[in-house]
Length: 255
Image (spheres, helix red, strand yellow):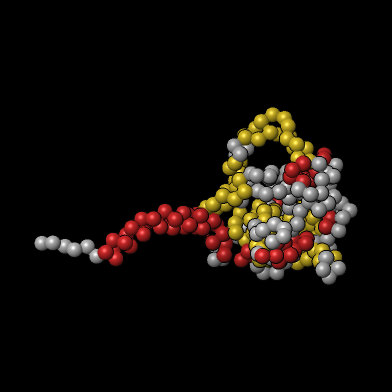
């Protein structure tokens, strides 16, 4: 008995053999976990330029389905809810040919329903002062701690409308984020573009996985205004850099 093979079935199997690894990779990165790179200095001293972070994607899907939520103090990866931060795919003179919204990495300060107030560089959550020693100690030692700018004294600065709001209350599905870089202009965050909706959050940074080792000390140039990450000097002993990213203890002590 001679059985003839269906050419279309054979072609389909051949195509699937090529597509299977790609489909598996997409499912793995979208449903299980993925890696992202840090670009910039807005999360110094916690995160450094070019470090790589592990994002457990399954957590995000569960939260978006209403199962659990992110915690205050988590480090989130998200797209900013404004077109003003768009970047061009091409440099000059072709900047106008296409743009995209880059993902940002910031620390979650306020959850839906929270009231956030910023004054003199300090942050108040639901009327309680949040201890920021996890970041302020570093910036005070560098001489860069910002207490006088508009961003150091407002929960929302709408430059287009010329409005400064010292305190805001988050609505359902809104999250208030700030960078750990508390120098003047050190971070573009919710103080500039407003709260981040849940739909724009890609996930929580759970751990630093690269580089494996790093030098302990980082000297920040307070005078650097363009690409400050290129003006950081690293010195001192080398230490293991693989670490979990847990919320600072200050967030656990909030009432």
